[in-house]
Length: 274
Length: 278
Image 1 (cartoon, rainbow over the protein chains, first blue to last red):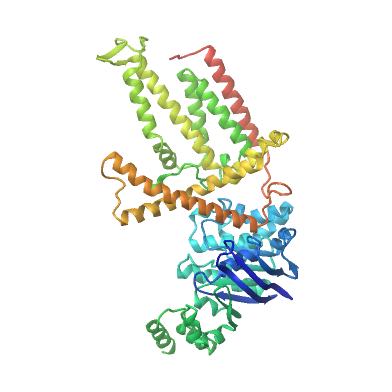
Image 2 (cartoon, chains in turn blue, green):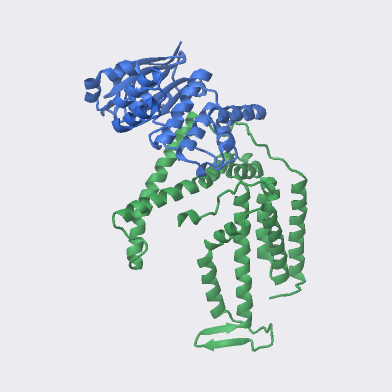
């Protein structure tokens, strides 16, 4: 089944202005883990906001699990579709972790004990169970984003969109988030669309879509995409050669840590071999 | 420096005061403030202070936190104190000395002035401590729930109680975020050579606008982003919402309720039959 489908969607922020999204067509299958790549202004975030009904398409149709998005079914669509945004400091409604995670289930009108169970589940799945009573303002960026994911997760969505959710984090925080999301996809079967401009993150996914000027320019497995080096560069995206090599070596059975740069990779290989 | 602003920030420990029903705490705060203003003599104020001290001990809030909260009103306290000390007229004698202790031109320090100033300072400090005790021991969500529950009668006249309560709790939740943001903007301005703590008053005031305007823009942006995040999480207003944390009135609340009623009664009695009047 198609979890998310865009059919000829166009959108412009101003009337007769430049199109942020231009005749966009793609589908995401249920259970997929998809990366959406693109440089700044390629229309990635517009895609997320259109999916959540925060913006209304000028042309075309958006369907989430076969329900075509309209003003009437926004609430039902949002029950199944969660979005995690970029800024760790602007998504929490409450001061305490558990209060914030409870916000979504409360909006759904769930009974108390069910909300409690969902908080347990969401915090466990994001590895934040020890922070249940903590103040969100005291957490690190990565932890805040994990709480944001938990807040969405507690609503038990079938599809989760991460709109550059790692963009404002340090490398450690970024890794944490990608790990959590990957687990959710594998274990809970939640469809994940990860919008990002970090190429390394795309390597973790099953499929990647590359956006350019508001439409899909390339799609395929991350490896396939990264093979087309020249093309990627023409869309303003740099290729993480190191990442590709690292992934292949790991698949070959070497236990290597995440590294950036050729020197670090060389050292990592040497220490692994010796 | 901005990290010191602790007013309005919840302090997460488990204590007697933390467990009290937020509705009761809100009502108690109103009662307490009324009592402080009704108190016209030292014994009444002393009773208020004693009760507050008890509450402070029961709340497990470190004394440093309380002192820090007081630092926020230091200027106000000093200002009021100096003005009253120098200009308060009165010829009442409290101890074995002339009523007017010092006089020079229009400045006049009297015994009554000293007593009155001490009273005023005590009053301000008590006010500040009791208000910050509420926010230290109550999460914004609990505070909101309490407020909403107390204001329920207003719903009958279609007053947007839920929305107002939510606005209140979000405001509290944003204090630390905006503090961080302010610090960030200040650092950015300093890095570009703006000086916020040197130069004439006018110069400094101008430098402050360079912080306030970006801060204002940032808060609008944060507000927009929060709005979208709330919408996506199916927020459609207060109807049909359930609450995870239920407010419950327990034996603790009963004790505090009785104490509060006793306090108010005591202060009113002392107002008519003062023991140690000003």
